[in-house]
Amino acid sequence: MDAPWSVIVRLDQVGQGTGRKLAADAQQRARIARDVGLDTLDRLEAEVEVLPWGRDYEIKGRFLAAGSQTCGVTLEPLPVELEGRFSVKASETPEEEPRDPELEIGLDTPDPADLIENGQIDLAAYVIEHLALEVDPFPRKPGAEFEPPAAEAEPSPFAVLAALKRDRE
Image (cartoon, rainbow, N blue to C red):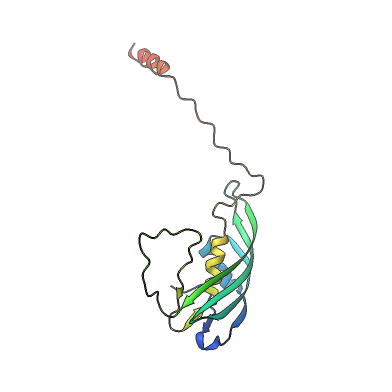
């Protein structure tokens, strides 16, 4: 499957560090919006930096996005502005030791390094991934309140018996 947006940096371009300013065009934003659950994505800009980190690499970035979602209560368009920062470790070699399945993983447990394939890092893929994490899965306009439909009162068992009695007669 084609990526909606791709900005490749080869590892031989990193040196002591390299940075890029990224901006998705209209066609890319439309595909990204569909993939991350937005109705529209009018703006997506990012600054991403790749730095050597020992034998591995650190990918740091920040992004700004603007678009719209559908309010889950009123079904009206809801403008959204999203921003985020990320920092990810990446390595050309997979983890040497698999994680112990009995090891408890918590919020403070560091993620394993992403595996770099073919000596290339796709900066835009990291932006899209972290944008998707910022999208509200249950958007709601300010002040919108869900009111469930009034439930019909269940008839009492005695009323049901009385109706059965009338039907038999």
